[in-house]
Amino acid sequence: MTIQWFPGHMAKARREVTEKLKLVDIIYELVDARIPAASRNPMIDEIIQHKPRIILLNKADMADPIKTNKWLAYYKSQGQTALAINSQDGHGLAQITAVSKELLKDKYDRMKSRGIKPRAIRAMIVGIPNAGKSTLINRLAKKNIARTGNTPGVTKAQQWIKFGKELELLDTPGILWPKFQDQEVGLKLALTGAIKDTLLNLHDIALYGIRFLEKEYPERLKDRYNLTEIPQETAEIFDVIGTFRGCLASQGLIDYDKTAELVVREIRSEKMGPLTFEVPADLKKPEE
Image 1: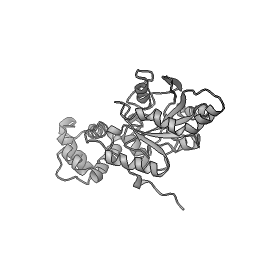
Image 2: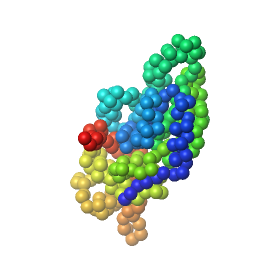
Image 3: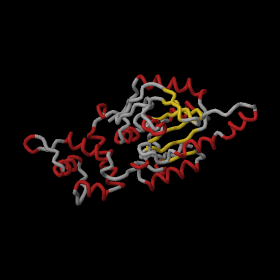
Image 4: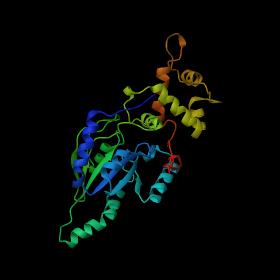
């Protein structure tokens, strides 16, 4: 299965981000803490270049905390600034402005030395669809300013939003890259909800999720679907899960569509507990 999704508004968003870059002091790159590498758009690196950046690992409550700590340590080892946050309940958000001030201290000191009155930090928030940008904005603003939704592609235009006297934030639509070089990246994005389900084969996504759980969290998979052993045949694993959870069609046959949808939904909704689908050790080393 080949997964691609690059709507027209995303191409436009890339152009607009590039044009607005000179207006901001710092970039907030929002990624999904469950897939910190897969949800980082390499196109963003090309666009923002050397602009100061904070990587925000959002949805940290849905991710495996041990693996999240590994990611934070990895970014630190790479000289990058990263914070684990949860935009739903506000966890970690208080750090964002403080860390921004640290990263921009030299710039603001130079402004003061030239007699320029300090102003609010101007930040741009970027990230892939459904990473939680609008939820983060609303939490920071303490009111519903940005539209939110559980489906990707809700934000379609840029907007400036002020947060008191210390921060002004430029929201941008989520941007996916035109072609995934690694199809596993597409599978991870699909499994965590970054790509619209209507564009996907949920059977393949569900099977990918099952095999991942079998490898990394086998007891959770067994407990959830009352398995003593995990079948290796695709039809058999769907039969066992579908039978146990009552995903039946006419004449008592297994409804594979309903079973696949169930598995994907339960992975996304933390029925298997907090999950992280990659660790820094999974990153491919650049070819020498």
